[in-house]
Amino acid sequence: MSETNENAKNKKRRSYKGLAILELIVIIGLSGALSWKLLKNDSGSKEAVPANAQVQDGDPEVRTRAVIEKEETFYQLDGKKILFKDSSLGEVFVPVFADVPASSLKTENIVTRNGYSFYRGSSDKVFTGIDISEHQSTIDWNKVKSAGVDFAIIRVGYRTYGGGKIQLDEHFAKNIQEANAAGIDVGVYFFSQAVSTEEAVEEADAVIDAIAPYNITYPVIFDWEIIYGDPARTDSMTVECLADCCISFCERVRSAGYTPMIYQNKNTAMMKLDLPRLKDYDFWLAEYASKPSYYYDYQIWQYTSDGYIPGVEGSVDINLCFKDYSHKSSVPEDAPQE
Image (cartoon, rainbow, N blue to C red; front, side, top):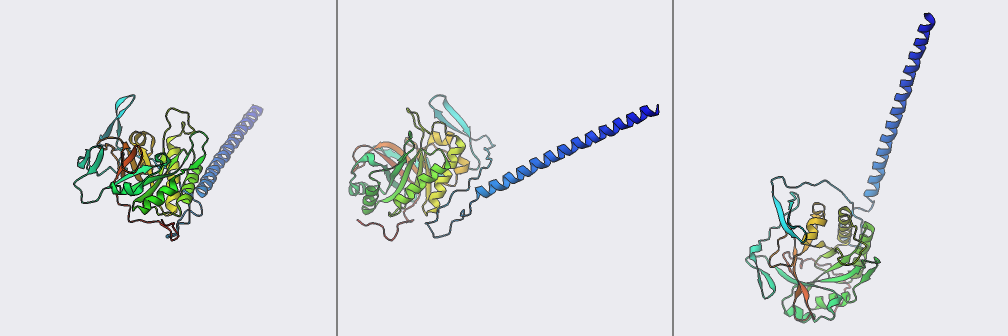
């Protein structure tokens, strides 16, 4: 009987010892996982905020990489929604973002006559502009100015959608110089096919270097577009990566002393751009209609791609700008003169 009790006691002690060992293993495992998480977060934050993240005021030579912040955003909860047309589904709707500014433009003040749009009933001046590239060939900028054009958005370059190579527009320097000489304000755009933040920064640097000698008063614009009809390196672009590229390009441009802007058509903006993350950048809307129906805020509206302007051979994109960028000059002291 006593031997049986002793065996029972030994068995109970072994059971307690086993439980203690198991508890120790669990505690060590949890401690290791917590330490790894803290170490990972610490190292991630160091990478996310580079040493040169702060731009010195008045020094356009400092170029920085954007600090990419990702926040959860929310939809309007009062039932407000946006209706628009989709080629496959017909009329579709999306809820309104409560944290993205809506357009204050009174579209009833827009009138169209003979293919040209005008904005009436405002004390603020609305500016007429064109956007061009080497495809327009030689341009008589004095005739363009006489036709009432206030500004021009000139393509600096593009990245090929097949090989991903950066190319400069053959006519960009000539167009900038001659437009400025004719008294036309100039902004520039880059046709992007970036698939990473590194490529977006590379594109921004190519633009900044190219326009450094010239007087750029209007924005420097990130024009990322979906390629239809051909396979493209951007076909599998995610919403998150596209937003990261927009931010990286725009912050690089801002750190060089220019005003950044994003260009996009209405449907792609609504369904591909993470608008809450991009709401702080000026926006150039492409919507070919007699009146824009885009819900959110925009500063430039491209209303046609087949307009006619004296001095430009063939059709040309025409725009209205609702913000006065002309007071801001980034012209260097040694800018070339005509």
